[in-house]
Length: 317
Image (cartoon, rainbow, N blue to C red; front, top):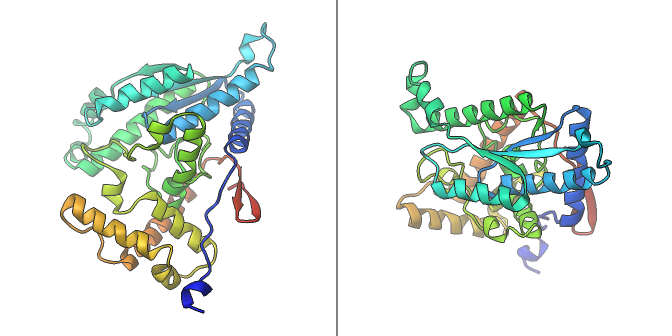
């Protein structure tokens, strides 16, 4: 019997999309009613995370509103989408955000944040001189706009971060896109978010290359050097008791990381990482940062029921 046949498999969670949609929707409605708010505000980017979050909330609100008497409009819940582009965004992203809002039938507005960004030249010129700092500044500006819209409309600000980004590697801006009241998809990996996107009929958006849109030509893969499938696989490995050394040589982990190292070099003509160990170590490093961020800002996350092989597990944090 070979060593590989004795190797314990890393289990990736599965879900029933309809059940997850109902669970997340009920969580959002409960949170909104507990806040005595009139619904949710959400930032729409045209990407898969914000599209799925908006679709989940709209479906939940439609279900709730149908149970409220027609003559009591004050109790109707509404989700509003705000599209906040800057000059670094691809114009197609704005079009996609508008298309998503129109398809879902939600009220939406488009407001460029470019003049607000430029206004920081008087107070924070050093931030505008560095792409990384400018990108985080734009994220915080969007958060300010969205949280103010939520406050003035008496609504709950719904975040759009998934589990891999927010809680796996902390790939978000503190007090920026992480500054929200609730996290509807915070228990779903990017893979499962794509699954729900297809459930709602957004197959094309599910295929989009993830990007924060904070720098020209930026993609998450280009920044990180690996994709979210790797983040999920390594994170699940650690949570299931595998050691770092076991993961580095694991037959599920090693081949996919080696392929992505080669792919990255082919795409960008240089290496981001030289070995599987370096990638695993980077995920560990980023996960520590994610935990530190979560101690500062940690919105409630919608619980979802996931299946690991024969084991059903309700993830509620």
